[in-house]
Length: 363
Image (cartoon, rainbow, N blue to C red; front, side, top):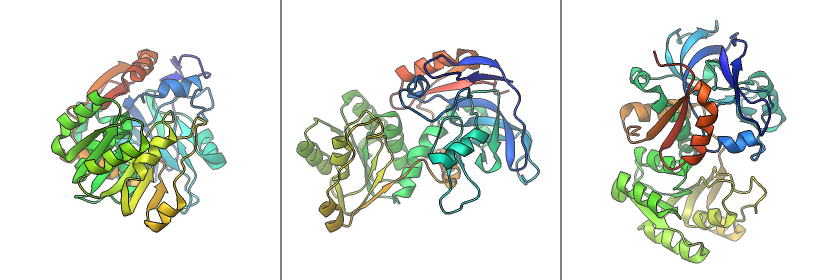
């Protein structure tokens, strides 16, 4: 098969012939139709983000494809099925605290690194080997535009955070980092889940206007100034009542003060979910006052990626139309233009901008 290979950090990806993957028990081989290219992919491949990829490697974080071969323990998947391939792979020998790798992208700890050595390659290829439990059937309509449906891989991340925080219909959510790629997705997903209103703080006024225009009065934009006390007051006022939950999706470049300001708008007995990258590039760590957390009975939890069941849930939201993919701006690139796709994604990482790689035509 043909695949895009990262041969070393700081060098362009190379498209070349590599051996076809085979599938044993508990595995599926999928013909890849579309894979999302994250806006920060260039930072990963340059080495700036210091991801634990080990070149040579076929990168890529999941995607849409058709099943080519299933292992002997699959009971429902069939060759030809249109499927979503989830990149979040968990070890099978510890149900309580499984090791995790993002296939073809990243990993956590030594256990995750061991998984990554076995499930080494991702979706920037014509074929991909995937654990059976990471393959999810898609509705037939997804086959009409698999590149658009590849955005599922973006939306499922904040969806996992909203599930972790227990977002309920009618509640008020504040999205810290709402003007970013993942943050804007969190706004859309929260509304699809029934949030009563979403407070959307940010510095980019054009993006704030875009969110307000697309989603109407349930979204409350808040232009930020950088003054902690003033910004906190403005965000709290925008909720028109208690803020039940805060989800933080700020990127690694954001200061910890921005995450703290947003988190401390949450009501007594409220929930704060941390999913962003604050501090991951050496910046200040997040400092929340112990007395404030304790006296207000605030729940603060981290969430890396999402549970396996979130894939089925986000597919239902998309299939029902509650989460609408139609307004998203999608630009697709063939496999030979992978480096152009990476550059384009870096320059077009705003809300609802999607860059996809299409190793195979939809057929």
